[in-house]
Length: 122
Image 1 (cartoon, rainbow, N blue to C red):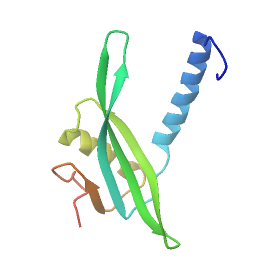
Image 2 (cartoon, rainbow, N blue to C red):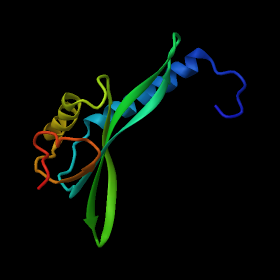
Image 3 (cartoon, rainbow, N blue to C red):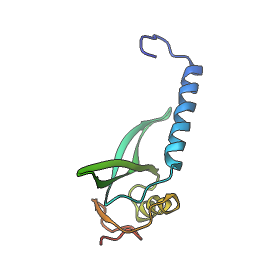
């Protein structure tokens, strides 16, 4: 794409399809239950549409653990939350992980007011 002056609609469609497949695989991958800490936050991104711009809330989670004396970090998951940072949005986001392999309570760091169910601070 670099160096191209015109990007065809067909090229945009092929790139979008490839990216969508990568994102679907990321969200479906099994999760390891190795995380000692969860870092939970929401970020707000501006999204453009043909009609107007809109801010989207994206829930984000990082897992942290120690391995071979080093602190490791991994992006566990992210999700667009249509209702913002609501309690229901956080509960749905976190409970989906149980199916993918995360089972136990752990320490969390986040700016949310209430600990989501099943992930209360130890």
